[in-house]
Length: 177
Image 1: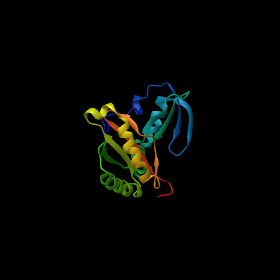
Image 2 (image 1 turned 45 degrees about the vertical axis):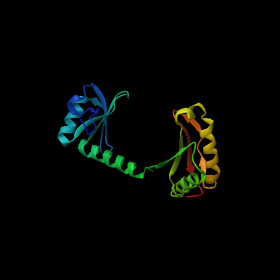
Image 3 (image 1 turned 60 degrees about the vertical axis):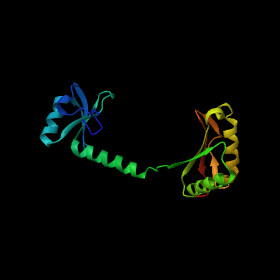
Image 4 (image 1 turned 60 degrees about the horizontal axis):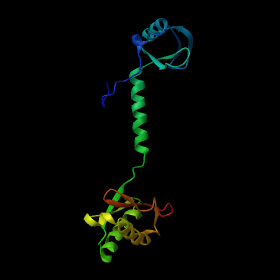
């Protein structure tokens, strides 16, 4: 079992119960189609593991290699790929239907700072009580906000009603970065 509780499904050594396999070495040397017992003998003589790498092939393919080293290389590669991934940060700006203009300006000023820093911004208008009957009022607030950020941002989608909120998702311009 690995760290996340998932069992490693790779078959090794004696667990390979297939009669005939195509065998190859870690260095690329081909042994051809031989019995799995014979392949296991070769692996033990070399002090390495016999690993089933292509169980669905006809005949299945096994490789003689140092399995611990192989797993270590795979984990290292995964970590390297994870480092290269770009994490998108989403900032949320909450508004209300009855918000004053100077409050909108203050919140938009912060949203512009976030967008200039390359972050995505989600504008949310919370609808209280009777405001739920008229979600268009929330859309109007977002439509007042949009002209204030449209020079540095792109609207991912039009304002839409979701639960008690009207949401608008805004991402920075490509040329802005």
